[in-house]
Length: 278
Image (cartoon, rainbow, N blue to C red):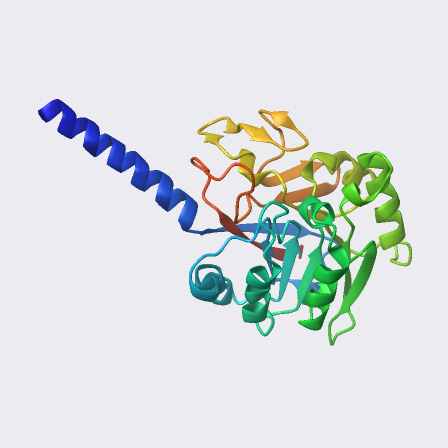
């Protein structure tokens, strides 16, 4: 009897652990310092949301919205897979934008699921109507009252192109930043972390990506187990990575797609604070 009671308790504990790890959201803070960050952008706070996949966290996404508001961001980046091609529910996902549109300017790029659902124009139009800056191979230059500038660029997911992924991304970056001065600090929204070498080669200062879902099952001390585009034991699943003078921030994402369960891999809101070197 005691043996079965112990087994039941263990099963209940594991079940509760998995449930909490998939239905609560953490907030991960990073700082990025660079001599290229203009002085008036010092302490510029970026919230990154990625891979919502039509998930719902409380009434009107209160579990996400409350934590974003607490951060008081200067800008919000949405880095793709806002919807899910397997259970497409744009109306539900748009509620998140409705709740956040007054918090800070929102910038968005597509992920592979937006392309796969074959309704990209509808998605982009709906987001634009809510005031979102939809970036399709283009960059916006942000200016402060003191005249300092930085560039926020975003590219279409390469699934929309007939080119190989690396060639498509290279062409998209070239188009997006063609009118941005080389010396300007460049932020890029691009869904795919596995293409970090391309971002670095194109001298992007900081890229914001998602897509990998943290490797879905994270092995303590080792990292993610499996990721689309990278396969088993992927290299780029979470955190900040550096290559030459380029950095990439990867969100573990908020929702799930085909695989509905995460392990040791809490959904996250990423917060990046830019710091200018004195």
